[in-house]
Length: 262
Image 1 (cartoon, rainbow, N blue to C red):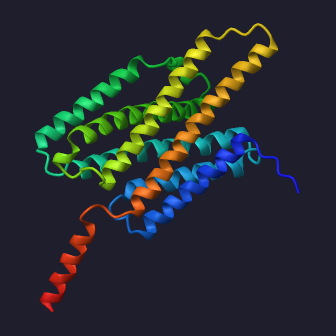
Image 2: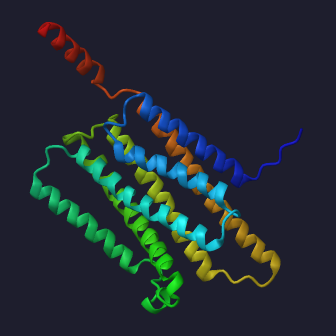
Image 3: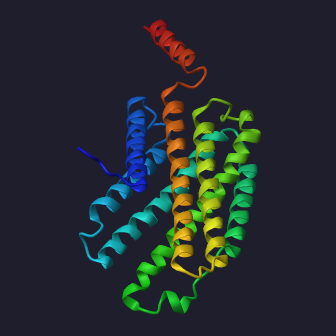
């Protein structure tokens, strides 16, 4: 029996398998209470991957676009909530005015980069066809929100690494490791986007062979990004399986307190 799998199929399978294992760890090790939005985001990524495989080619293009855009918008919104969740857990005890100033600074910086990043479609283009206008707006929202989320992930990652130890994001803490993973995924995605946009602007194939070489390079870059994501998910699996430093002592202290009360 011979199995012929493409690189894309192998990466898709590994990604889904890794995410399912991550969900098992989150549920089995009782991490859902600490990171509900992160768990929801993981489940949503699995749903989107399964939907892309099972629904593609079985529904009309318009229906597929509507489903995928709804899932993309939901994923983008949940991604922002994941960052809020991580920031709140990482910087417990931070004064409210410092929280507001730092958050506003990160958001302004991210939105500033977004404003000059990539082409923005004109409003006339977005609303050219009334039947497709809503789908175009939904797609634009998902794309731009995802870029903002990636930029905020990088900023939050730097903040956690630099000053997280002063609060609740010390080394080996779950929140720090999750944020480092989010930042790594964001850096990879942003780098891929920059490289692909550069290729699109500068590439000028003169024949089919050159075009095939450019497309092959594009596929390798996208596959490399998938490999980074899988590696980060494996990192999360290992880190979240292991208890945080001091967790056993806290559990023992709590058990001792209950026994003494009895």
